[in-house]
Image 1 (cartoon, rainbow, N blue to C red):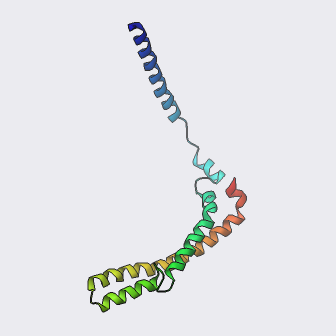
Image 2: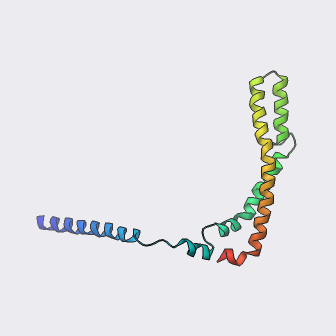
Image 3: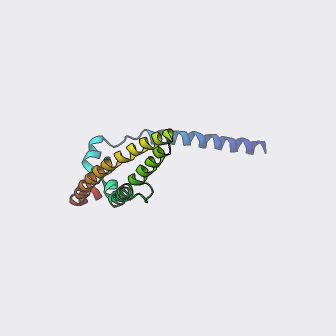
Length: 136
């Protein structure tokens, strides 16, 4: 019984040593060079971005519709302006101050999203013209 336990522990120790050596050997394999990645077009995420363009377009479109919505639409600039006016009329200066900063931030989102929409249209055009390069 004791001989069997010694044999099993020896096998376990040898397996552990071989596992560590195998991992060390795997870590020492050279990574592909930067020039190889540049030649294949990998690394800039073009293929993945081209794949996501339709979803990104929808998301930006929905966000702009929400921000530019009427006063009854949650998340719209008009609704936040209405809330700000009510807070000022009620004399809630702290609430009005908070809502004013929130309104400033929300208003700044509109031109940012419009610019992203224009940039994304250019990306979509690039993806259509370079479809073969991006898909390989």
